[in-house]
Length: 440
Image (cartoon, rainbow, N blue to C red; front, side, top):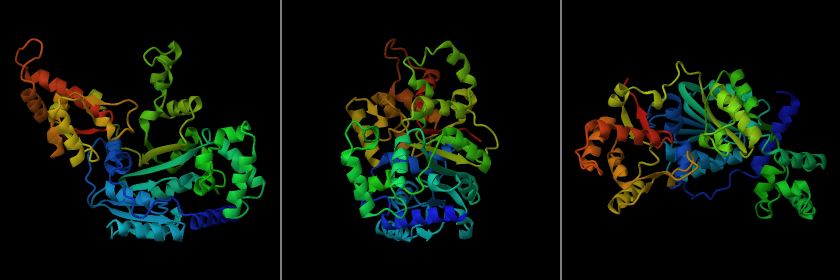
């Protein structure tokens, strides 16, 4: 690292010592934030990569760039029995993170003042690494990825993200402006924040920079100004640059974290009737190209937020391509963030009231529309709150719930019950609400 890069890292450290991030009250709990727990649960990413279910007990999880420890707390809540380790450049942030985890009863969590490049000095390897809102401020993102890969177990997964240069282009113009004015020569503090506020408020309302970046309510907040207008080291990237860095680091892309919101065909009026050229070419387009096309057409995501891992040994077999034998021997699990007493109670109330059950109301990330299950079908899923079941067992339960065909009044067959359960599970698996595991 040259002197210019070293000086920049020091400015970043000072900025977060001066204004630790994120700002959450010490006693604020994420226990009912199903969405965040779903994202930070190792089970989600592990299933997407391996099509297998994993227990979090005894796993070792790193929060690389832990800040004040709020994400570390989410990781601890989402992964029962896992050991949480956090690192950050900012000593002030590390102290707050340690205090936060202890306040919530996670006494064994440990935190270190450490740069990502120095991770090997911990002499630990990790099952999961959370690197949230950090990678894009490193001088070389490939070096950061390589450092995390060096301490990642063979089946481990990294969640990290980059700022989108296309979505944040106006903020980068603002940063260039305030850098030119000298407001970022040193660590921005109260004076620089107030000067930024004064300049933006003084602009006419139709000035393009103000129109595209300045939200009076949000930007009046000190932290918002620091993290957008005066953010030391902030850089943006494209999908192509992200994949290039993964290739340098010899890491495999697993999935976008909010994968359903990067679906290219959703940008067209009629996804089932695309222009002929796209209809023919899209099936041959790589995931990298599809994602890059999306960001060029619709740069709405601030973060290029993704999971990656060591290169897989063999491709997964999609559920849509399973044979009958695969289904007959498969086991079904409910995602841990849905397997709660509250969700179970809500489901039972829907069953008793003959009302559809909106399973997506707890975790909306994988879908863009509500996912409703009619009450009798939902009743078939109740055993999953006790543990994993075979598809065959659920089909038997379905047969008891609907022993006759509602139109013909003929007895329902085992084959029909099995097919109906299979279709329900295929639909829910697409959103990772249920996890399907083939027999070894």
